[in-house]
Image (cartoon, rainbow, N blue to C red; front, side, top):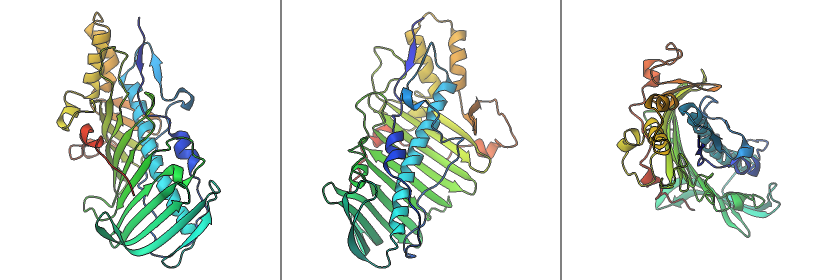
Length: 358
């Protein structure tokens, strides 16, 4: 039997995310700086679930929905860690114990290059007035980090250009990462939206653009978003048009370390949300591709491979548990917890138009 390959996803950003920006010992900065701009999730939905050496390539005689959901955790992990880079940068800023508006130059502990940090109040960004603004720039590479924020209620926009912040970074040199954090949404205790553009998509294993929302209410985090991959394909079907958006919505009970999720695999030109769950639901896409590649495969055999991709998926700290109507623990996976009817990702086409800059 011919081998089916699911190539496409995510991209090895682990070196970029985990190796490029280190943490720092926190000191008390002035009260005007926010302490946190990140909504945390648990390993049930965010985990580097794939072998980094294989660059997130999954291959074998056939794939199942369970295999595909392994990739979802890795993708959410990438967005989670991207937000962590912003948080680490904020931690570094606070470690400088800045006490008033002003500017100073310093040698970065990350790349030994000269940087300038400017802290101002009454900052104007994109024609909107903010209480405060902070800009870090590199003497040679230009702007590296911008954060603007209001304190009451707390609302933050932060943008990071990794190569300017740490010139030693050798991956994602043209990337821009943006976090929008707020505590002003009446539906949630706090929210975070992570966006990224210009990620390295020179081969099929990289995400080019992503946008993911995290909204926390008590112990539960609502998630939804898209990971656009211009060279991606689902199965090795010659006539398949390259380019897919891994689009999903999920809930994560951080305290219980459980999650539920629903995924679609639309092409990048889809401009409505409803098609993600109809024409491009994970099970329908997988079934179409298998039947195209193996037209003589009996329907009942196809269904065995597709069955794990049907409906919502249930996760615990070890990953995928079951899906659809096979609720592994109704006491934890309650009807209200598994209800995701009020959240949806963006249309993939809208992710293609995202612009991030200083």
